[in-house]
Image (cartoon, rainbow, N blue to C red; front, side):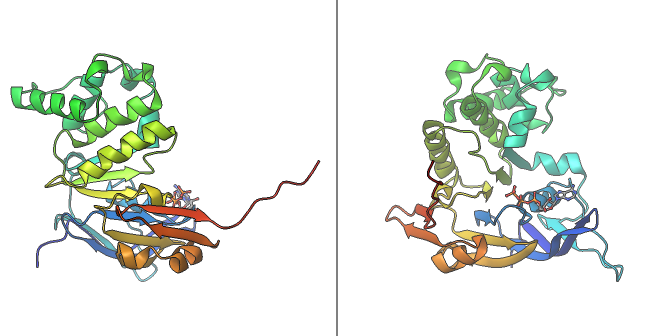
Length: 278
Ligand SMILES: Nc1ncnc2c1ncn2[C@@H]1O[C@H](COP(=O)(O)OP(=O)(O)OP(=O)(O)O)[C@@H](O)[C@H]1O
């Protein structure tokens, strides 16, 4: 069997005495695009932090420590690992909206994807091939007309598109998106979803999407992992995982769910909030 892209075995993370992740085991094969869902506090961001080596598995009382393997390797040097990944999150957006990183132009920021840093000093010189990839990525996200603008002067939607280009310019194995549409208006969200949809057809980048919005899961993502209070509640095919019953149980509220012929979902809760009359 082919080595999974991502494999976690018995991974627990304990912080300040709280068990944030509780013996998580999962495997994501290459090109099995995966959505990670779960209510607030379920551990989704923590799971991504384990992937990106911001968090390390805790040692349990029996002295056992879970393992995280990426592309079959567990002993990654952090910088080398991050170069194999692309990341987009509202947090990253914030980091690129001010200070030194915010003063980078769109082109410089996208180039920084090659080093997985937030520095415009590129180190090894950009080759002509890299330059072409940068132009292509900027074009893909529709930012060519703003290529020389500093990131701090862009709107949230423009900056998020730039960060997608930065995340994919170096053709990473894994593209991690942590609640990527936070702060985007409806038009920017629609543009973002189109880009995400087309990326789900890219021949070599595996998407790992964390979201609260079932309407944002492109048809190309066919696998879901449901997290509930630090544990895996479901890990399998999307159509089996995304049911009204499972979603209602996970979110502890009645969830309505429709799978559209296009493969996208429509979702809502049936609870009606009534405001007290004046
Ligand atoms: N560094 C930390 N120290 C202590 N507790 C933490 C830390 N990071 C996360 N937690 C706790 O771990 C739990 C899971 O947090 P996490 O951010 O992973 O959840 P999430 O599923 O991403 O939630 P949300 O949907 O609200 O973003 C939360 O209860 C959170 O308070």
